[in-house]
Image 1 (tube, rainbow, N blue to C red):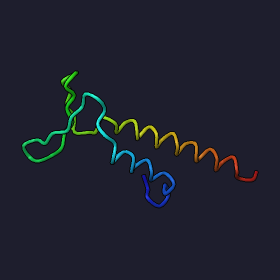
Image 2: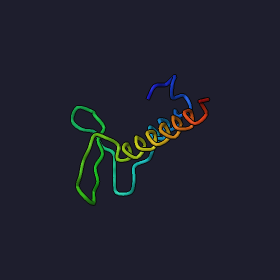
Image 3: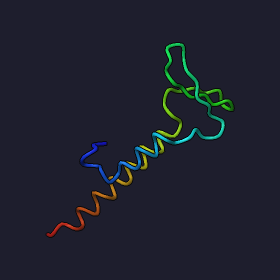
Image 4: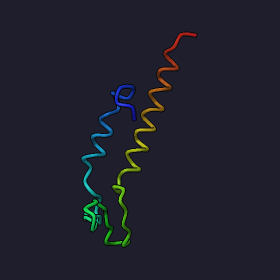
Length: 76
């Protein structure tokens, strides 16, 4: 995400950075102080927030819609 080119989409980054963990996920620190996420149901752990892919997909969809609108509004 480019902060200047994607200024209208920065709200997605803000949503991603402030997103709570989904049900079943908790936040922990490893021995080096790095944050990781743990799912008690599946016993999966990851250093990536469980909702990151959702917000990446949202950004890609909105970016694509924006590009299509720009192409449609350009004169022939």
